[in-house]
Image 1 (cartoon, rainbow, N blue to C red):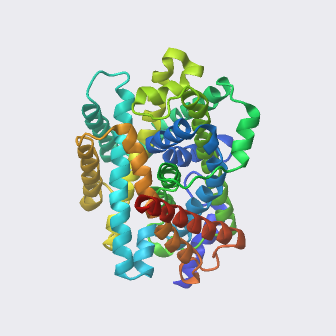
Image 2: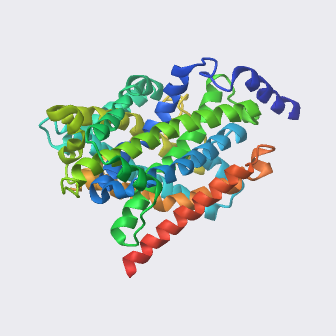
Image 3: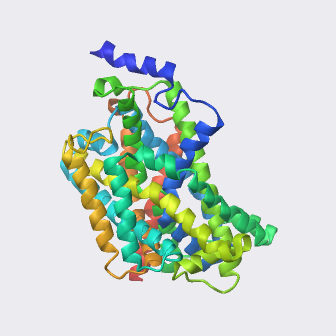
Length: 437
């Protein structure tokens, strides 16, 4: 069996590790990076970054370069677990930790995914409400039905093919920010020099930015997609998926870096565009989708609402299936069961049933009367509190030879990973302290 277990790694060194990796070049690299980055720049992220820019202006631009290495390391670590261990993150946690560790993590991630999916569906509804004169909850029901229908009768790959290039609309924020003509020296100064405040409002936005950039659903999705890629080329047994070559890990590092660079550039320019337009005009609170869309007016004028709606719908349709499927991965793996998007619904009713339940619960939350734009920020705060404990477990797993063999973390990865764990923990603690002081 050991000889067999070594064989797939050697094969992967020849084929590059997955069904798409035989295709090289700019478009394959950018295409896969856009999916990862756009899923991270979901409607919750757009709403959070827009609120940050509107409320604090250019003074919070520094959060983007600070978050970039953190975003990279957490996604890379989750990819490593799936690629080297051969199972998804929560299956790995179940194998390596006692139930008293597993159950709170599964519960927290599951609830966080529902809240994030609900907020993102609400964001899609609010954006489309700019164009369609129907109540937001009604639009949410329609959008959720379309997304689940494609998942059930088609595949996530179909959704990805349809919507990943629509995510390029997010680059409109780059043009809008440049056309708003902010003071270059102020931009540079606020990008390089952090301006930190210790009040509840400021720390809430910081934790929300951390939560929406480092969301737990991204870890789950990334680890399981590494497994799904192996299944797609016939490696359905665990022993076939164990192990990874240096070439595999370099390719993974490159793909993750491209995705996170895309995500971070959009993050930066959403804050810059809203800071240079909304904040500069004295509009420091975003209550509606129309207010958020107005940040694109320097580029699109009266057509800003169409551009905003298209961007939010594009990334929303990419991200919501990631969250609902991620919740299903978490639960079935926590139960010791298997779940794969390569299974037909009739073959794995539990897996697809959980996706349906999460979708219904996310839709139902939109009938509770929450402001959809504010819900986007609050969902990021909720996710922010789940980051430190889950990241701690990931660091322990990726430094364990029992889990990843010879592919334990190098010095730089450990420095970035432990620093990210510490920073996210301190930020959440500081926010809690402000609630009681």
